Image 1 (cartoon, one colour):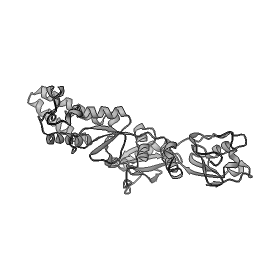
Image 2 (cartoon, rainbow, N blue to C red):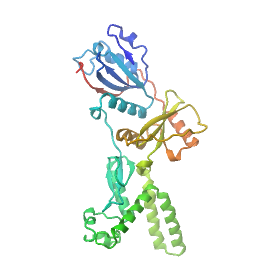
Image 3 (spheres, one colour):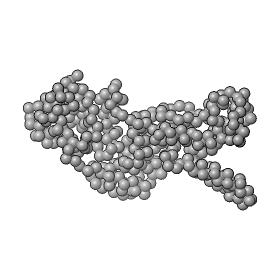
Image 4 (cartoon, one colour):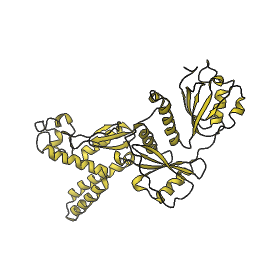
Length: 366
């Protein structure tokens, strides 16, 4: 924190400010917030915005005489900056921060096998609910394609408006094609259909188990010269493997969404480690070399924090900031590889302010 005296020369008053990446808040004499920013060079930013020739966000306001306090937090990566910007906005503007912070939530797929008429759906709301929520996925269309893939792989009902009429609903063309067990018309019971839905949940949670089982079936069919059957099983296996390919590689139940994120540190060769879960993000380690062993790192507990989760998923899915290690795959070797990636991404300094985010909260003390 730095308190400013408008009578003191600006250059002298700001000499102690770091020329580093920060999230910072400018306040007036009554400690009312005026502007919230994220910049790459705090000293250059404050000098530019408070200089005599600066127009500032409002041409009617003399920011040099208005601003009395600068509060900042050092950050070393885009990931850390996004988290800090959200935290400050939530603390300082609890009623309006959602209008200040723009977040892009991830998409998830959900089903409750025990519902009267279960169905897979897509959602961008990670709030707790009965059933299983799996993700994340970056796009709405990706979530919809996953729903359709599950329906095709496990011959699930495509017409929910007909399913809710079971066992008195009219059969559709998928029954005639042998691609639906037809619970709608009572060919199978809803109890049997729910078991099919539970199978789809278990498979999406961990496709490798089903791939191994189906591979044995395929080999047995081929050994018995039932090549047509073996070909159908192979096509099923290919579909199962696609459940973890490309944009679906991070899909898992939300209660198992846990990653150690290794991000750039303040200097080349340094890194920071953040433990990420649905309930929040916690900085747990600073790294300056190969870790000899790993301390216990429990995933942050508590209710789901949708906004922090949105930040984690956006960086995880984009793959541009640092590295992410699944908590169930954590090892010194994995951390060393992630450290080598993150420690080379230390942000370069900049002579100008390097604005990342700039939000005018108020002017003239209003």
